[in-house]
Image (cartoon, rainbow over all chains, first blue to last red; front, top):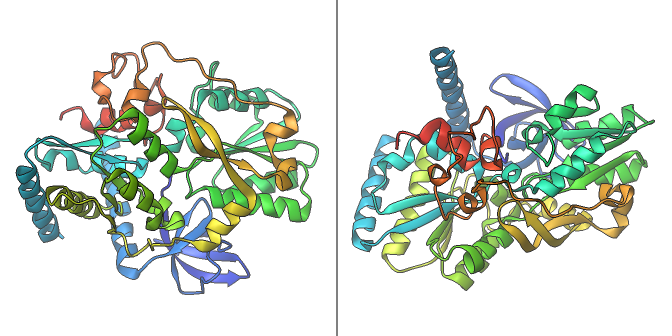
Length: 80
Length: 356
């Protein structure tokens, strides 16, 4: 349940941001991370940015998520 | 990457051989549990190193008495229940939110902000937010409570079942299972509370506490650090997740939690009462406390016959040792909470671990 996805802040107005994660854009609040700025990579959990994250870590997580999606697709095809 | 994994694996083997006896490392995070199983990490570990899946999934440890209160409120026509999807299938005494969903007053939300928006959009009904989760999730609830207070969204309230990880680790060691030799500490809880929060466990109980990220290599390197410490007879606090976790954590998030909540004794499914482990809204936000608003309280839950989730959560048995596991209790028809949540030890074991 504590899953958090890395995303880049592409728009920011007060504490309401639009973030980009693997090409998907969605609204996120930065209330808990007041130091966040446009261009920063953040970890998003339940609609809130909870911490900054570096480029390398974010890329590794995105890659892992893509692999898991692929793996689960394969599993579903095999079982279904 | 493979080099790092090979190096860590060989160091783990050397350390465990040097230690000789059986060692037990507990992870206290459902996301770690899933990653460990999905990536087959158990299969590359030496025989005398055992991984235990602790009470790291907030859904699994939410007491049945709490679910019963949620279900009771879901029966009211003047209420809308808003919940994270994780909670929808958790069984109470009679049924789950899923069974109430047909009534259309149960709404799944992705964020606490969506729950507050439901209240703004439905001024004639009371929106109850099912506020569960560890420290990672709690600040998001605190933010919307403050927003509701500032905007006077008086038809919004929360049913706080938020829990704290460190008091549970303390109770496990002091009352339930002395055989836990070290903890692999949760990454995203630590992003909020800081890895320094585990210092008390290291100091008082002399157990290594190592924070790790969620990628396979990060978990294996975290385990390697623990094995090195144990073989050297040390117990230290360390974070291997420096890209995200600092010693002091997210101060802004901690402040907002402290402003809204205070710790009280609370019930954990399968574990029982844990002192100062559950968060209750402070008096100044009392009007947003669903327990107070409806004058209800959690009743002690009845044990499910034959279910051994409590022993699984404390690391005393492995899921297949439970007589219900894989027979009458499966992810499709779960009986115990550890099978309901995909992050539960039983569900992960059922999906990925049965061959081992």
